[in-house]
Image 1 (cartoon, rainbow, N blue to C red):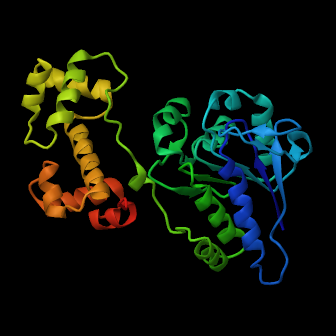
Image 2 (spheres, rainbow, N blue to C red):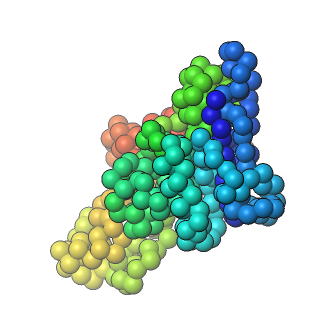
Image 3 (spheres, rainbow, N blue to C red):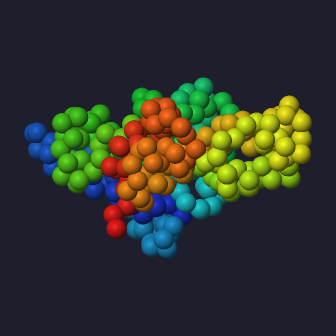
Amino acid sequence: MQSVGVLALPNCLLTGVIGPLEIFAIANSMATDGTPVFDPMDIIGLKKGDTINFSGIPIPVQSTLEDAIPDIVILPPIFAELDKALDNRRLIDWLKARHEAGAIIATSCAGSFLLAETGLLDNRTATTHWKLVPLFRERYPEVDLQPRMMLIDGGSYVCAGGAMAWQDLALHLVARFISPEVASTTAKLLVMDGTRHVQTPYFMFEQQEQDHSDASVHAVQKWLQAHYHEPLTIDEMAEIAELGTRTFLRRFKRATGQTPLSYLQQLRIESARHLLEVSTKNIEEITGLTGYADSSSFRRLFKEKTGLTPKEYRSRFHRLT
């Protein structure tokens, strides 16, 4: 049997605390010999009394750090005041101690920051929510971050990417400690997608002006958002910036972290994603509307960027009206 402790931290997602426990309870009921595998299951808090989650709902704490010794520690998504959790040395030291005692530390979304703060991810592979990637890389440069991945199992730790990836995390642990068959049956019973391997279909490109002070680059970004569907050249962009081509390329990369063509490509793919979600236009129409001339090349590029073909993307994300 594996004892489980889910940390209820201030501003965490309630679903990230309760959800895994419900999945484990359902999986336990399917154990072949009738003996629950995930047992006991516990909600752990920083102190006695309720923990207030991000939605303002109190979570009843069953144990505190001082008296909890779970075999599997689950860190849920944290949606606000992450810095306060990272500055809590008592929490970080407890995670280190549990790891040293042989516990598996399992995280989803921003929970990976807490594991990285212990230093246990240095020179190891991890993932986190796609939107938190720049902050994670800045803060933990020694970690081999793979943001495209939905889940990474490092043996003594498991990281899941998105805010709702606690579902993928819980199902993975069911497969690891009970069986893949039970994990598959649990996913089907709950009508969950148990086959997500990458986060790329969920990435959103931030089209707003980047956090930099280069007015020339800002002017080009604003112009591109209105003209991304037109045939464009680097020389035209440099002219908008009122800079020489080489100077423009250098300053755009420094300000945005991308080349102008990569940035333009992101704008076009984001527009294509939107059209696939909200319209019934066919792929050839969307190809032209987003600035591409060849639908075959567009399909290849779309799959490279999102991990799905345009048809697969529309099937998964088209908004019913």
